[in-house]
Image 1 (cartoon, helix red, strand yellow):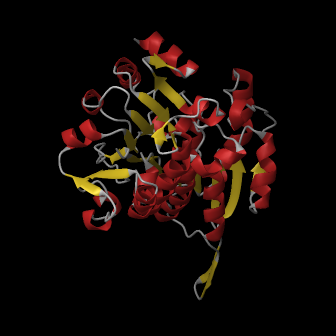
Image 2 (spheres, helix red, strand yellow):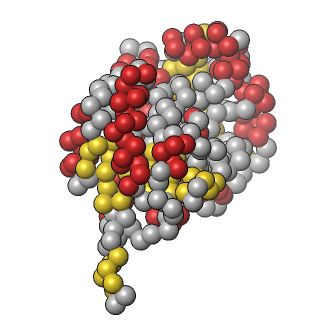
Amino acid sequence: MPINVAVPKETVPGERRVALVPGVAEQLAKQGLQVLIQSDAGLGAFYRNSEYASARIVFDADTLFAEADIVLTVQPLTPEAIAKLREGTIVIGFLHPYEYPERTALLRDRRITSFAMELIPRLSRAQGMDALSSQANIAGYKAALLAAELTARFFPMLTTAAGTIRPARVLVVGVGVAGLQAIATAKRLGAIVEAYDVRPETREQVESLGAKFVDVQVTAQGSGGYARELTEEEKQQEVAVLSQHVSQADAIISTAGVPGKRAPCIISKAMVEAMKPGSVIIDTAAYSGGNCELTRPGHKIEHNCVIIYGPLNVPAMLPVHASEMFAKNLVNFLPLIVRGGEIRPDWDDEIVRGSVMTHAGEIRHPQTREFVEATS
C-alpha cells in the first residue's frame, strides 16, 4: 500500500499559501508516495486542480483526513480536522503551539505524531528545511515594498527639472532573516538604510549589505541565534540611542521577535510622535503583539501624521513563491520521516528529535509540554 500524503485546503482567513505546489507533488509521486490534494487547495496560490496531474484530487475533507497517513499543512489544523485523523497519523507544518495549546493537547490525546516546522534546529544541514527562514525572507522583501508604497516620499534620490529629491532614510529594527532581506530590498530601491539589533554580531551582516549599524551599546545574544529579553536598564539605554534614529527615519521596518513570547515593544508612542509627518512604520511583528506601542495587529492607522501598519501573515501576500519555498522545505524534511518506502522517523537524528512536538500520546518538545501543562 502506498503512503498517502494529504494536503488540505487552508481555512485561516487571508491564508493563500498551499503546502505542496504541483512540481513538488510530482517529485513525491515519483518517489512512490500517493499525493492527495483537497479540491481547490492550491487556488489561493494560483494553482488549479488540473495542474496537480500527479496527485489525486479529493473533494471531501472528511475523506482526505480519513485516508491520510501524512498531512502537510501551512497553518495548524483546526480541532475539527484533528478529530478526523486516524491514530498514528503524522502532521507536518507550522503548528504555533504557543498560540494554540489546546490543539497541541488534542494532537497528544489523539495520539497524532506532529512535527513543527518552526522547531527545526538551525543546523547547516537543515537549511533546506528551514521554513522560518524561507518565509521570513518573503516577509522582509514585502515589508520593504509596503514601506515604499505607504511613505509620502520617494525612496531613491531623483534629479528632476524641479530640483533634486533626497533619498529616503529607512530604519530596519531587528536583523534576522526578514530584517536582512528588508535592508537589501530597501537598498535596491535607493534608500539610505540604517539597521538596529541587540545582537552586536549582526553589525557585519548589516554593513555587508551597505547599511549603517545603529549601536546602542547593549548586548543581548540569546540561544539558537535569537535575542534574549532586555533588562529594564538595557531598555532605557536602547531607547536613549534609538530615539534619535527613529525621529530621522522616513520609514521604519520592524521585525524583532522572541520565540514563544510577545514581541518586544521597541518603538514607543513618544518616539512615534517625534517622527516626521508622512513617515511610516511597517511592523511585521504585529502577529505577536508588535514592536511599536501603537501597532494594531492587522490594521493600518495614522497617528500624529505617521502611518503605522501591522500586517498579519505577510508571506501569504506573495503566495506563489511562498508556497513554492515552503513546499521545498517540506520535501527536504520528509526523507527523515519516510525511509525505504515506510514511515520510519529517524529518532536518532537531531533534526527529527528537535522538531517533534507530539508522539505516542506525549508532548515531546519540553518547552511546549511545560507551556501546555501550565495553561491547561
